[in-house]
Length: 353
Image 1 (tube, rainbow, N blue to C red):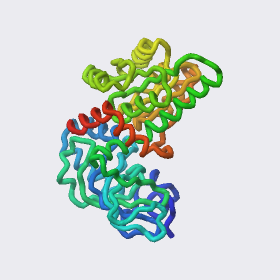
Image 2: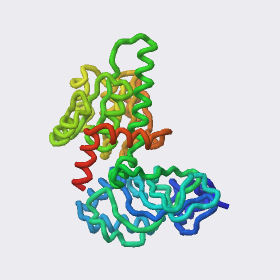
Image 3: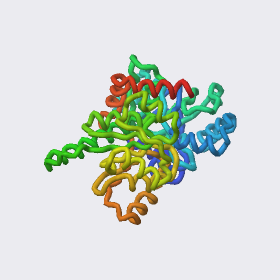
Image 4: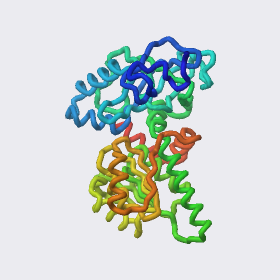
């Protein structure tokens, strides 16, 4: 029996869902509601890649070897330290007769579910990857379940660009929803104050998209928070934020002061899109009472966030970005198509990789 959520692929421990499993069965035989994809490229999530980079001191050969070991051992790409993975693009090889995904052999697709729950086999030893970038050219195959999500790649965008965008497409969609709800609340209450939004990691992939999504959703003033002057200059040139602040998101007092100074008030909505741990308390301090903090980073400690807010007596709503919002892929791709500043930041990042 093939479970729509992939239970039949769990090897150990028994009784958990694929994301929580230590090891998956990555057999290429497709069940009636599964799809097998011939994988062309992985996109490792930022938190996982940074952890691997730091662990191995930027040694690409050692990073590549560890990724290969993880996949071979676990039947999926799930960093055992961060618990995170990434996503993939490839071409559909075979679709089971009862698969509800609507995919056909030959479709070029991007998975919109995490590699942490996707059965995966790599067959080329990652020979074309130098281990020094988040995007990983590869050969192999992956299995999608009935409850998986995938998008057919658009023909008007470079596949590498599409992969980078779709990897973080949940962030702008949820940011837009949270900001729009805040704007609507202000209107209902006849409150003339503009909705203020702070995005930690504003020059990154998810951060830049979230800044534009916030503005389109009605944010009155936005600040992009970045750690270094080079990112400040890039974000200013892109024109995606009303103001850009340089601050270490791991310094609670420093980053909250930077946000409040830039906006004139604490943020109504703070969006955390950084790939390093230790940013929870700064996000809480930077947000006004009654506001919302949205955590998109897989480096987030949710215990630290919850206990930190309690210890600060901070009345904030904390939202975990789970990567899925209906229509998220279309929204993110539209932002890249229509916003030259966003597209420029993505292009620069891909060129650097």
